Length: 430
Image 1 (cartoon, rainbow, N blue to C red):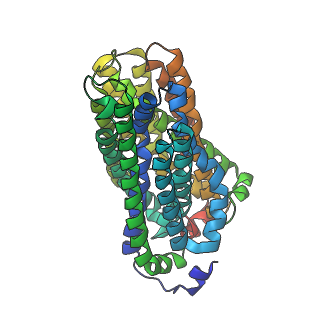
Image 2 (image 1 turned 180 degrees about the vertical axis):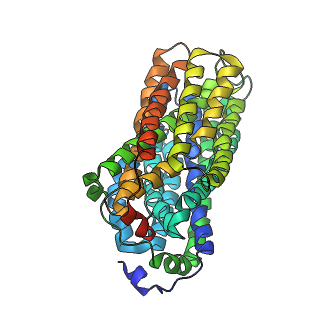
Image 3 (image 1 turned 135 degrees about the horizontal axis):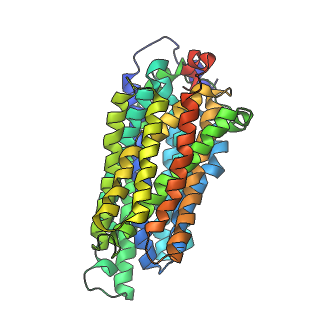
C-alpha cells in the first residue's frame, strides 16, 4: 500500500464523484491520441514523407506503451493514484512544449520525440485509470463503468480529428491552389505548434483540476484499488498473456484504420474530397465508436460480454473485407462503420481478461496496457502496404486479420468461466 492509500479513510462511501473525475482523463487521452490521424496527413505533406515515414508518428506514440508500462506500475506504487495522474499530465504538458521547438528547428525526429513524451504520460494515465475505474464501485458493474468511461474517451476521439483537421489541414500549404514555399510551409508548421500548445494548456488545467480532487480520489480508491505490482508478474497467467495479445491486435487494427482514414477518404477511388474534409470525416469513425460505447454499456447489463464481443469482432472483420473488395461510398462508409463495432472491444477485452487472469489485477492491467504497443506495429505495416499499392484498400487486410484473431479470443472467453477469486477481489483492480 502507498502512503496515500494508508492515510486515506477506508470507510465505504459513494464513489460517483471520484468516478466522474477519473473519467475526464479518458476524454483527455482520447482527444490527444485522435489528433495523430490528421497530424499524419499534415506531417506527410509538410515534411514530404512516404506513408511508412509518416506512420512513424504512430510508432513513436504507441511504442511508449511498451517502454513505459513497466515503470508506470512502479510509479503508481510509489506515488499513489492522484499524484501519479498529476505526474502523467505534467509529462504530457512537457511533450506538447517540445513540439514547437522541433518545428522551429524544422526537425521531424523532434516531433517524434515530443509525441513519445506525451504518450509516456498517457501510458501512466492508462495504467492508473483503467483499474481505478473498475474499482470505483461494485464488481458486477465493472463492465458497465469501464465502457461508460471509454464512451467519454470516444467523445475526445470525435472532437480531436474534427478540431485537428481544421487546425492542421487548412491554410498554408493546404490552402486551395497553394504551392509549397518557405512561407506557406512555415504557416503550416505554426498551425501544428498552435494545436499542441492548446492541448498542453488543456492538460495543465486538467492537472490543476485533479489536484483539487486528489483527496476524494484517494479516499474512494483506498478500499479497493489495491497495491500495484510489476506487469511481469502477469506473464505467469496464460489469460493475461492472451488478453495482452488481444489488446495488441485490437489497438493496432483500430489505429491503422484511424490514422490512414484521412488519406483513404481523400483517395480518387474512394470519395476524392479535399484533405481537410476527409480529415473532418474521420470524426464519424470515432463518433461511431462513441455511440457504440453508450449502447454497449447498456447492452452489457443484459448480454454476456464474451458474446457481445464476438458479434462485434465478426462484423468488424466483415466490414474490412468489404473495403478490400469495393470502392467509392461503399468502401468509405464500410470503413467508417468499423468504428461502431470497435466501440466495446477495448474495455470488454480488459475486464474479461481481469476476470480470468490468475495474476494480481494491477499486474494484469499493466500487461494489458503493454499490449497497446500494437498501435506502434500494425500501422507501420499498414503504411508499408500503402506505399506498395496503387490504392489504399489493401491496407484493410491488416485489421481484417486482427479482428479475426479477436473473434477467437471472444469465443474462448465465452467458453471459459471467470475466476471466482478474481470476482471476489475485484476492488483491487477489476
